[in-house]
Length: 331
Image (tube, helix red, strand yellow):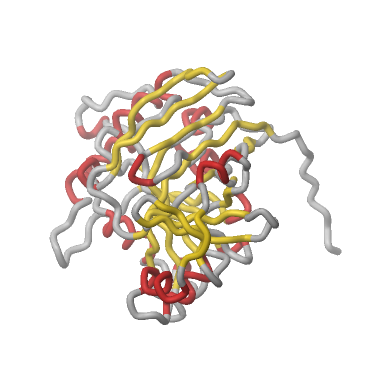
């Protein structure tokens, strides 16, 4: 089952459900957030709710995408209650990519390894703990709230002060916190964890700054567990031509951590278990165009696709206008 959110011919919000390759409008319910809320109190969860309310007219997802009517596949009525976070150095090969980006060498003696390589080795050694045990915690970052999410098809704005505007093709877990403070996973979506890699490369302590950028995810949520093997394609288009293209891998077969271990180390904080909140948590990547020397320009288009997750995620690159920051006194 896949879920989308879109605007119908009357500019009214709607939810689309894809089953066996056919997409239909969900009756009665107009947001995935509302669907999740109803599923909290329904035995059988989301599939049971979909069955009970029923499906209506058939919709064409590709036409909706072409018309710019697709929305992010989940949002929150109050954007400040949607949290976008992520983990890094979680995939086999991700340390090599990071070290290449930082011009470091992972073959040095342990005492001379970069912090990135040390963190990666920790994940290799204890990122997939045995049942009943706790694994090592990963690198973690905060990205923003619902106000920094670009809809599928919408350009991703990069701030005027940014030094780079680069893609990161990832899988994102989609969660809603129930009334008892329990994280409830809806499923997974393709994501572009857009970052400023030049700023990060200046000094690794600038990682937090480099992640405070817009992002995008979707267009579809694949309900259920993440497949063990995910293999998609990340590309950049310039003037309609492919500028750069590479495969990307995800899923636990290609990771140094289990999804459960990464989820535990995010939701172990009570801060992230507030009833009603939505979490979009990105699980990392080992594929970056920046590591291959690519520098994007306004008007370039990112395209990230993996057939198990439906339509590709496409977003252009845009640069925000410069602005002054003025702090006013309240005294």
